[in-house]
Image (tube, rainbow, N blue to C red):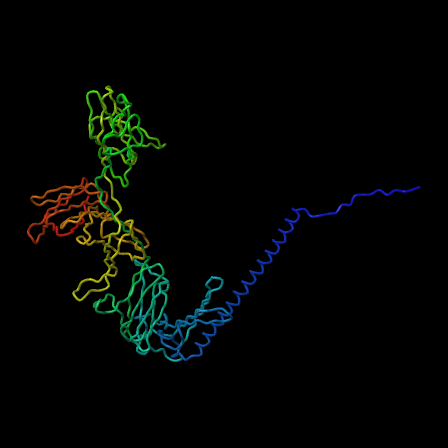
Length: 593
């Protein structure tokens, strides 16, 4: 009997794609974690190594200072003077360190400070500050060590005085952390020290060598600068000048610095009259039409071969002036006969936007149409009606006749319009001394110019009052409005904009600015300027100003001055009987309630 063996299929276990992805992801996660831990460990070790090096450098310098005699403890060009460098760069274990050393005399409070010191010696002992800085992985680190060095015998201060520098902001608050640079190259050895103000905004240097020409400069990042100035040909009477230190006396000086500001100046042409018009030389200014055509310099009904169409219409292109200030009127010239007529209507874009008829509530008679030119548009609010179209509807009951629209126009006022590339002069009111004739020398004075868009921005300006002027005759322009008025105050840590409107130059002009007691411009004040035979009244603008140009010269010294009256409801009138107008003159008037 023959036996048979049943054959079974062989199955092999394998990995699916999902298994592979999961496995690879787990491996990546593990390796990334290991790498992160390794990287963190490396950074910790590097930081620790760098810090150990910094500590070594700090301690090394401290031990060196303690090894010196009291008289030898001082820095190169420092107060007190010595052979220790103020700053040095050291490379240790492939790390670059910057080591700074500041040595100062200390006026101990126990025996009185400054003028109240019991023995009159303000340099009781020395204090050395050692700072080591380094950068690792783009992060700056530092270590500071302070050690006192006390004389073995009785305290003494041979030939020295005390220099105190106080730093305040614009409001008189102390400024901490301002850098004070003290330099005096007339001493032997010379002095050149940098130190930061303390929490009282003060730098105190007892034991400063007696002498003149201590140059002081105060700076802080993001702040204005303050300094003393040389007496030279350009500034023979500086204020403040360099300081002097007298043995046994205290020289104290205060400086003000504060956060810098920015000022943008924009130049414009004044608001002026302008217009859009179509003389119908062609149909390029017509947006849509039906049964009309442009022929012979006029808009007429179309000729269908055996006569003119009985009716037709044409719409102008969109009239949307840039810098629109107000609409004035729409006008036209046409030729009609007993058998022809033309009606005119005005359209605008609503909020959808779609072109719709201006309602009679804003333009009375528009729905029915106008036949008499011109039509007053001054009541239209440009906030709602910034774009207009005029349309003409032509009719004829005689196929042999057509009305003709010869031209039409829309008049408006526009401006101010940016005026590019205008040079101007800007000056602050703070001074740094006087010249040989006693005239002030200003801390800030610069010739500037707006760019191709009529704009320029001046950054890093100190708080002050700044005035802007132009070379009227050379430029051929006068400032007819400055909004806000000039000069303008600039506070710390602010950004302001001054808009200048410039009009054609005349030999004599007068810009009047009217404000209330809080310096707020008064709009609509009535300003009357008169001197026989001249007598003119104008109202102030939204900037509280008005400008008279083309005047004749008139001065008190010439016995022909002008008179000025300013009035506004709710305020007391101002009447000035002797007002000079000579060149580009200006005046500021403050109205009392």
